[in-house]
Image (cartoon, rainbow, N blue to C red; front, top):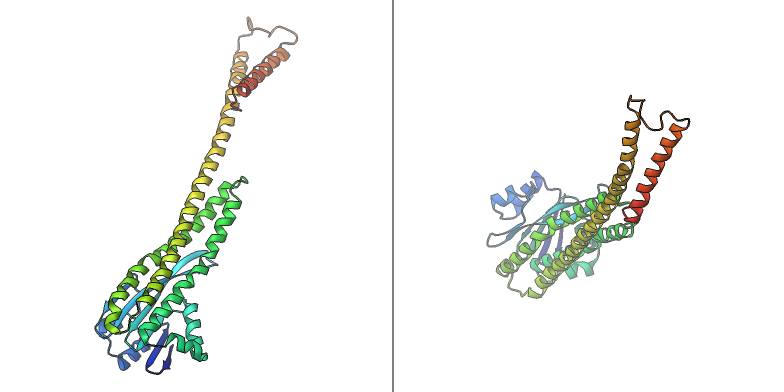
Length: 305
């Protein structure tokens, strides 16, 4: 699907789910290199900025959180930037870009804001908007971290391991998309003066600043979840050690009883103590109880239990 907005000399062409007809449209209406058209449909894993003299070809990725899968994936945004024409191409996974485009279609004030000078200015304003909208997407990570922290000391460490893994997976997904963005944005600051004579240092500084703000927030969450993971592992190990200590103590307490039972279970009736007495069995049981009590109080005295 191809839509177009014009505001004076400035044009914004938005392509959703590009296909072969989209490539034919670009080939017929714009002088674009064949290798750019070739890369326009398939996804490109590596973000980049390529200079073709009159225009730039830009590939940038944005993180998208899927609440059903509880995972963060990366979606690609391809851009072809002329001085007065911006071509954006993406799948249907960038609702923020769709909202900006629809507002520019319906509201003249919004269109004048984004399409006020040239396509380079429009690109920076759109990128700043898209990067700023990543901040609310991080709120679910913050909420999830708060929930994990609240459950940390209630004895449910085994279940928290899975919750921590989900958060770490989210953070990794965001980092994978965000880290290359700064390189692309810095490259844009070097290439766009060739496209437009206007000074956009303030705009590109704001865009890079928004990227840094999101990255710093993400780094803070990364440090927090790693600290919570270490704390949870320490608590889990401590409880496991306590359990093993108790089991070991009971094993040691049962060992003398097993030894006594083995001795009196031998087939040597003559000479075996208590065997010929009327209450021999009760005496042996009493002996075993005394040994157990002695072991128990000894472990309590040593604070092993």
